[in-house]
Structure formats: C-alpha cells, structure tokens
Length: 85
Image 1 (cartoon, helix red, strand yellow):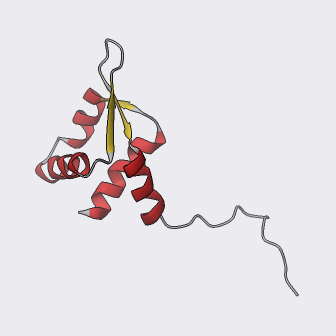
Image 2: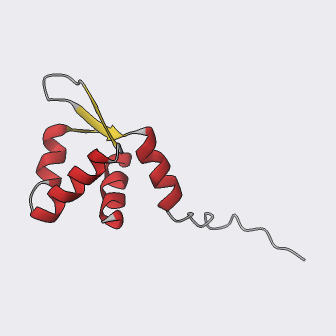
C-alpha cells in the first residue's frame, strides 16, 4: 500500500488539485479508494477551501516528510559530475 500512497502523493506534489480532480483520478477503482482513505487517515493529505471549483487538495507536511523519506534520491543532472583523482 505504501508504494501506491507514494504514487498519490507524488501526483499531488506535482501541483495542487481540486477535490473533484482527485476523486476522478483516484476513486475510479476499489484499490484507489483504499489508497486515498489510507493517505487521508495517515494525515498525508491537506484540504484547503478553494474557489467555486472546490477545495484544493495537496500534500500535507506529514505527507511531504513521507515523500522525502521514501522517494529515491534523484541522480545528479548530466554534465554535473565532478571527476575525482
């Protein structure tokens, strides 16, 4: 389940989404419902009042910590490696 929660948080981390966008993308099948519910129960999701389009859903501080702890370190950009020796 953690890998699916990580997928959800990475998707949300790309940009905040409205609640209807999240529900359309993540409530389409049974396993996604469980992922959404588990991420919410763990406090990884933040809901902020938005405009008429609905509340804005984003990654909470606890969710960001989960991402940092679980996300593999990105390799350095090409051409940025220093030769040693």
